[in-house]
Image 1 (spheres, rainbow, N blue to C red):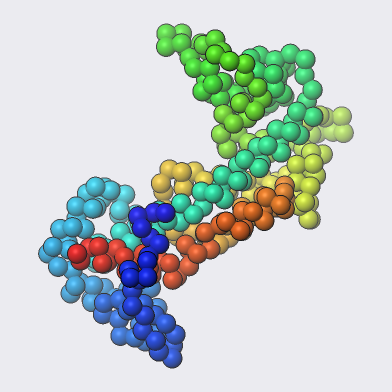
Image 2 (tube, rainbow, N blue to C red):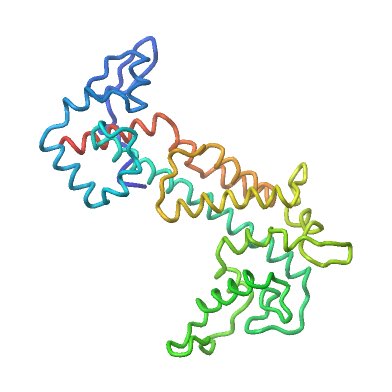
Length: 303
């Protein structure tokens, strides 16, 4: 839950019933469907200006100072609109990010587990550096540079480092492949689908393309490596924006949701069913939810 955005019955704005359908009774709204669309787009600035009291302006100014004017500036549509409108967009953006988190969680865990299992079968090893895993095997099947840096960074999380030399500290317990898999970030797993890992011949033992039907057994039609790489990099970009508290409210959010569903479904239709049953993105990106956020923020600014 984000900032009480699930409104109780007493807190919900009143609803005006008319032939055009139910519309939220925001201050200054005249009841017509056309006017409602203007309100939803945040265009009725004249009415807003009249209602922005000195007390309300001071309250909104303190909130903006707490969040930073630079950050809030990314949520303005017009310099002339009242400050509660970008604040409402900001809070809606927070709610969107919260709703996407469970989907991105499942995407990352499902993807890394299936790729790790396939890698273990594809790359048997007899020697390893610190952790008995194909990911830390000697010689390494990973791309020089990107792969080595990612594995070292993950091992530094697990082992810790000497402050003077930067060397890994002795292990405090035996680490297994699962520990290393969990310590690697999403960028590492999406990076495994770049062209380096595409086999150049039938005798080339790199991951793809022969591994794609194993990793994505339920993808119909089977995607090509470039298609998988493009989709995963798009979702990695979305994940990074959400996890770094960036604006996502202008994105095609329904498409983002569906792309996550798609990749999870390629791996496990059963996991997808669970994710679909729990997801809140559809609710949070709706016009109705956005209007509820706007009403709540407006009311708080007028108290």
